[in-house]
Length: 104
Image (cartoon, rainbow, N blue to C red):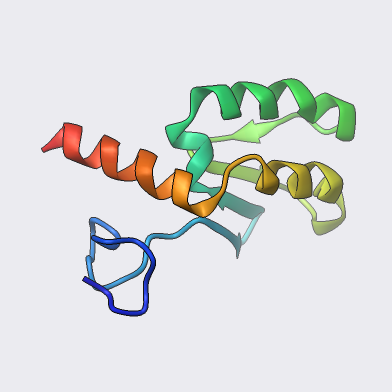
């Protein structure tokens, strides 16, 4: 258990690390926004997919917890801000731990 973390068990791949919540990564051909809540919450994912066309003319490029953008200026920051408010960290941790416990 990570003593500096609010999650009890940490990240399943390495329990010494805190559970990631939202992150951005710059890859060679795209920018990736990772939000762990979207993968664990089908209702949140449905909301995001439905709202995306209201904020961007770009085609949605999305994996399980990854939303990819070709260029930085294509990121719909207002949508991402609204999206980040839809689930609090504690909810994300609870859903994650429920999913991990089911898989054991």
